[in-house]
Length: 412
Image 1 (cartoon, rainbow, N blue to C red):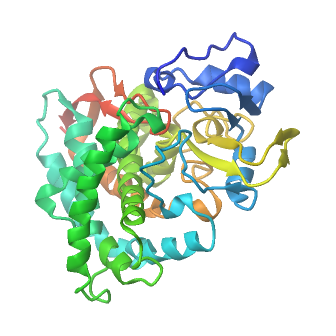
Image 2 (tube, one colour; image 1 turned 45 degrees about the horizontal axis):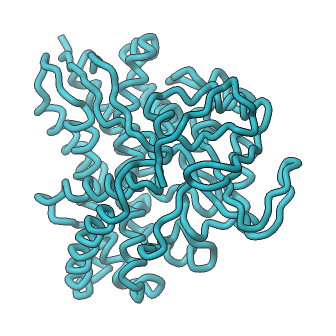
């Protein structure tokens, strides 16, 4: 299966539109074609794509309706538009329906409980400050590598209690998981399998160690899973699936929002001026960054029965793709949605974290990391200036930024 194909154009017959092309997202030219779908075919069937036939749901409130209806739209079998190879299945709780989903999710939510977040904030602040203090003032560098990846990887190592000196392995495994052909990338399944088995081997050794730890004293993710009745008997591939879910969830959303916020402020300099005048706008800016960036472009469901949805006959077994990146730009639900607007009236009105039982469990941790980082940035720098074009990831799943050349200017 090739992930490279002729991209859709706005002018072609609407029946032929295929918005799964990863290159369309890499070029960042998805807006017009999604607007046409929202206007003319908000529940749209694509009969032929490299990922098979699928339905696209592109309006805000329709996406919310699908996301909250796990009875008719099942998560079984994966959440991206593509399918994993049959000989390498790694199930995880986001790809499950109740009751198993609920039990496994509950097993790990302690790490993002409010009390634990309060304990983590000073640690995040110290690390963010250290990362920012080490930046080469006045010189061009890649913000993604020096700040976005470093801060999120340090946080991941903490919530897994993963060996800190090996933390960049977590980034590599996250990239492996999201760059495969099944998610619109180019990495063959064989290469992905080899890398993720290395991940499983390392985390299995940690699991064996954590079996002897007291979960009352350690609330890292591995210890929580090793001792909870809902997760302690997982087979190795299910353990790997949940690891990848937690690594990607803790990495990609925050990493790409950190980069997207810098890009947004540079593309809308009047918003940066507002922020400089009033840093108290940071708490409302953070959800706006997450909406505007939309770190995961979509989530996929499968119809568990024949469903009539908004006048369309969706058959049992059909893929139904909720395009968060389109819903977050739906003019009928969000005022002036293309604009990056840091004092937006209702900034939490967005789809990036999903809805219903699968709403992102780490949303508060992600927001806290972004808030703390921007508080520390504003104490040090007059501006983070983007000095070149961003290099985006070729993926229809992760809306990622691989390179963002910047120069930081200190406060005078």
